[in-house]
Image 1 (cartoon, rainbow, N blue to C red):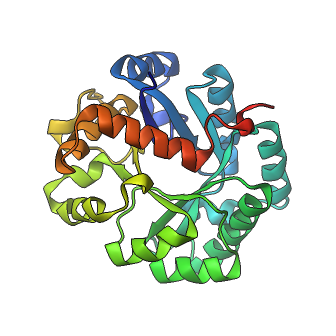
Image 2 (image 1 turned 45 degrees about the vertical axis):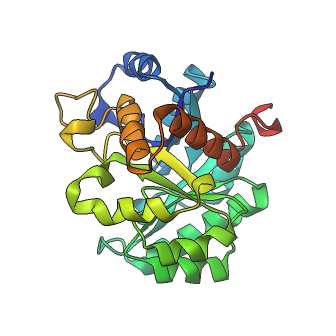
Length: 269
């Protein structure tokens, strides 16, 4: 029986500490059987690739450039991204997107880098993981310029149900992180109660998006988010949606498989 799927984390992040094998073993023991490990800039593509090679079947790579690092995209990065994707048939594109919560880099710098990743994802038929913060209008503008692939993930989705209903017909999936279990984020939980069940995924965004104490099953002394907390987050979302843990696990793992193509021919080189 498949375990829980973490649709978005950053296992390569040094804030998680240096003992990756122990962290993976702990997550597996907690019931996590697969995760999508997202890069944020070209400098960490090698680390993400190494994790995927070292933990095949468990860690699935995603290669991309986060909007916070768009200004660091070096000449020729698009070709290097294509080369990396060709080496990993199951890899997706991500994390990429648009962010108006930060002032730098400016959206004028972020947008062309995002456009290029949408185009690469579409042309290579890879799903893409999108970071969008305070930029929903710009996201739809981007989609007009460069349509997304037929499957894409809005990670840690914090938008409205109205925005989600516009995104669903385009192929959107939406992942829920433990950060949204904080009382001040209850409006996000209410949105997930209204989403189509077949579009809901789970994520930790480890080492970020720390859940409230009640949903931290594996605390880290650094105060960062352990990927093994996914099972507690899944249980909390199950209760909120009136489901049992097993049904939530099966639902979100199946949705992740459809979104990312797990179990398809893309996993075979």
